[in-house]
Structure formats: C-alpha cells, structure tokens
Length: 191
Image (cartoon, rainbow, N blue to C red; front, side, top):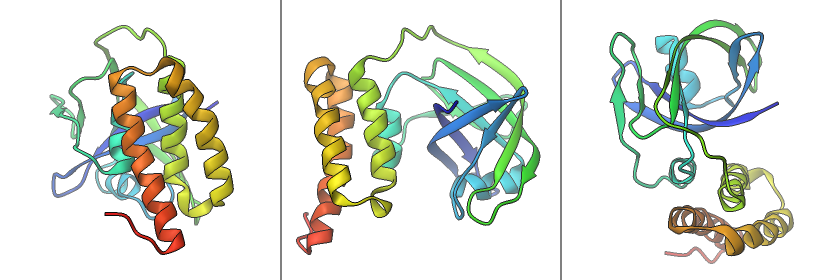
C-alpha cells in the first residue's frame, strides 16, 4: 500500500527541499522510491536522512508540485533535518540500505523518532482530488492529454461538491499547471 506524505530533506549546503511522496511501510521501515535524478534522492544520499511529514493541508502537496510558496519548516533538535512547521505528525528517518535501480532506487529508511502534534480527522473528497491531481501534474510529461483531461473532469466533481478555501486554492495552482502544459503542447504558451 502506498501512503501520500510530504518528505523534507536537506542538502549538504543546507537547502531544504519539500516533496510530496508516495511511501510504503515495509517490515517497520519507510521505503522511499524517488525517480533519478531528484533533489530528494541527492539529499538523502548526501546526509543519509529525511523527515516524513503527515499533514491534512493539501496545499502543501499542490505548492510543491506547482512551485508555489514554500511552507514553513522548523529544525529538529539533534537531527540533521527539518520538518513542516504545521504538520500533524512527523517521523525522523535515517538511511538503512538501498536497493539499487537505474530508474527508481528503493531507499529503506529507519524511523528514529516519531512526534505527534495533532489529530487527523480524515480527508474529504476534495482533499483526495487535490492529491490525485498533484500526482497527475507530476506526470504530465508521461501522460496523453486525453487521459489528463478525463481524470481532471472526474476529479472536478469532488471539488465542486466538497472543497473549502484551502482545497480551492490548491486546485487552482494545479489547474494552472495543467493549462500551461496543454498550452505548451499546442504551441500557445500562457502567461
């Protein structure tokens, strides 16, 4: 099973990277499988650590994909990583071992600490739709336009029925990405 999370990593130069990641829990380890090349992969290879953030604010997922304002992070005492300031929980992770792959290595991460800061009330349908659209947007270069538009049309139903202000903001960021991509495909780039 894949769980949608936010992974924060730090480069050797101290730059914080925030990325949505579908992770797996296997035998007590967190398995992260980033595509090559990626900042997450490079940062984990450099410092051997990451932070797994759990949040119900889907704007974080959308902002990372749409390259919008970064959400605030905080350093973690005694750990070489940063967490989202406003997350429900986070796990500090250290690299245990790697399953080498030319396209998508599997990074087996050991949980070294877990901190809970709030209760997860569950996702509404609009939040789930934003996360699904974020995944689609991250793969626009691999998907046929017809599939993207079909999925977008279906996901719009959940937005129309259950979205609040945060979900509408996140949805618009991602929708702008889709529209810009489609315009580039037809040679009519938007501003």
